[in-house]
Length: 115
Length: 111
Image (cartoon, rainbow over all chains, first blue to last red; front, side, top):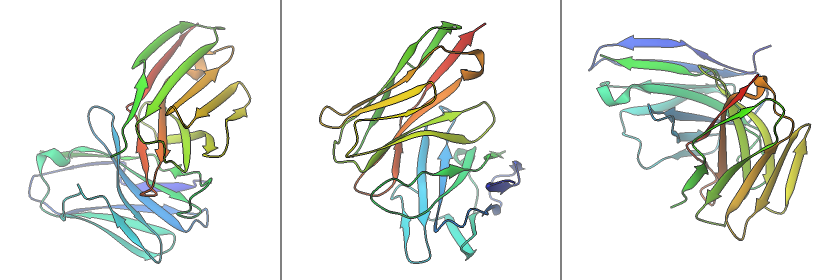
């Protein structure tokens, strides 16, 4: 049973295109996240989202937008793709955005290459 | 702004050795600290989570400590095995309720 799944695993596209990455979790978690891991392997939070609150990292361009059709899904839409968007994107989920011990569970990642 | 640093960036040890990975963070106002493992081409696996009120957590051959006041954590791996080879990431959850990651330590355990 896959806890957090992402599709596609690889995505190669041209600059200027619009693309989406899908994420699903079957853990019954309340909160989902998107992270970007750049070529230097640094992981940075992009969004955290539950059904009440969206928290956006201030450095994320507004070309990126999360869309959640239901609690188990958080998709990432990217408009007007740029070369610098090439990276590995990870989805994650946790029980709640709480102050305490909420372990995050990660998906396998989507490697995006913009040509 | 929270910054997380991990030293060393890479480490190579022979099988059976005990080893310590280090993590430091600049803002001590954290809710918890987590250690993750990342295998090449794969996602992250949570190893240990230490809440801000705790000093350490143990799971099998792994022991993580937290000294919040000095902004430091260590991950101790006992009797290392080739299967432990991976990148180990430290992350802290701060006032923004989001994780800030270090750049990782790439561990290679030689058979």
